[in-house]
Image 1 (spheres, rainbow over the protein chains, first blue to last red):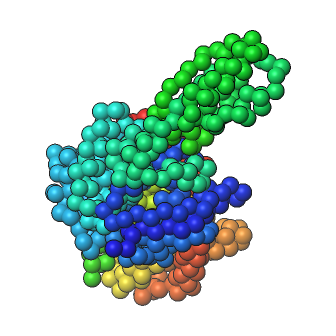
Image 2: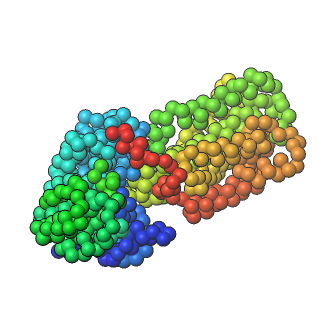
Amino acid sequence: MSPAIEVTDLTKRYGDLRAVDGVSFSVEPGEVFAILGPNGAGKSTTVEILEGHRKRDGGLVSVLGIDPAKGGREYRNRVGIVLQSAGIDKELSVREVLDLYATAYTRRRPVDEVLEAVELTEKADARVRSLSGGQQRRVDLALGLIGDPELIFLDEPTTGFDPAARRRSWELVRKLTADGTTVVLTTHYLEEAEQLADRVAVMSGGRIVAEGTPEALRANADSGTVIRFALPSVNAPLSDLLDPLVGEASGRDRRIEIVTSAPTADLAHITAWAVDRGIELQGLVVESMNLEDVYLQLVGDETGDAAT
Amino acid sequence: MSDWRLLWRSIRAENRIFWRTPIGAFFTLGLPLIMLVLFVALFGNDPIGTEYGDITTAQFYAAGLGVFAAASATYTNIAIGLSMRRDEGILKRVRGTPIPPWVFLGGVMLSAVWIAIFATTVMVGLGMVAYGVELEAAKIPAMLVSFLAGTICFATLGVALASVAKSAASAPAIANATMLPMGFISNVFIPLDNPPKWLTLAGDIFPLKPFAVSFTEGMSPFSEAPAFEWDRLLVLLAWTLVGMAVSWRRFRWEPVVGASTGRRSRRAAAI
């Protein structure tokens, strides 16, 4: 079977900023594919190009065999888009909104069925304005499903949710996609990608820096160990300390972090270096790397908001 | 076929939204009616000197304010409504569905024309019932043609204004800053009897006076049936084409980056 999505060398520039810088990936039919990354990594731009909302500057994009930039109405008839930034007319009732949008699709799910799926049957006749934020997001989801799409885009579906609401929403997405709908999900929650996705692409700075199943990423994580410490001000050249290491060092404000596959050897070298110079390493810690570390390592240093 | 059904549904949905927003309904329908009652109470209902001849205050204002209500229902409401809904991401959502743009905008415009019909009918009806305003059957076709030309023109200009307004905050300001001054030089708020030439010229160029004059001529006892004002209708047509050209080039489905603040955070805060 041909892939549901095929992206080759996609680029998008805003002025001098390369928002998407040579991204390639493919998604199989029925797969749940997550694009994970911090704000500004380029994942929303990528997905908006796939949705047909934005024009690309370069590369090839095929979704369901159609170029989204040219697909027009026929294309939009086959995909569902659940956008964080898309509003709903608040003066209409939930059922009125669903009825209206349902008319636009040639294939459609019965409104009552969709209402039940997103657990809003009791709110069917309530004005959208009167719903809680979480309920309004479920209307978003219902609108994404109403056209019985072959592929559904979920843009940060649980951003701003409390943990309990997030968990409920994951269950909902799992239930709704169990029938083999292809899903492209963007998120900056690591756990969300892990919970929902068959495959994850990690984006940073407009590029895909890692791609694989959550298990594969985790396996990657298990193979690594992190050594952390703070360095007091020293006169010695740091190259003596860092160059012989097996692992990779990064640091800021004299806080050093070394990710290594040879922790014993690297630790011996570091401690020997410090002892020779009579230096005490502050806060020296050795721990095995978790998925969070892998992620943070992949997306670099500007990820203060990635874990929030 | 299904496009027409979709258009019909859009018109109905737009109408519901209008009636469920009481403040908008008040400004569009209530305020012009209050102005009619006030003007007749203040100036009496004797014949006054106007461009159309000496007609009663109510005869003048039922037509003029009826046109004003129709122009607000189309131009002002569409401009504000569309830019608000663009800021809220509603237009972006529509763009991501198979709803064709012409159906969506057609729904918005036709719903506004329908509300304008309602507003003007109530205005003229009140004039007839309460103040002895009279219509002549032979001139009603001219009134209808003028009304349709005027409302379609102002609906198109409303879409055009939403296209150039950066955000929902600027749209009402631009709408009022253009509508109100036009109102004073267009035989709408004040009967013009020999105004300075440049004011006459300004009124003739902008679309509100052609709308008001061609509609009022259809209601004036001094005009001759069928009372079509072709030169005025031509000005309306020209403005309709201007509105279409601007909308075609400038209409956007997404909020202007940086123009609206923090919808995302507001939404997150609401959860």
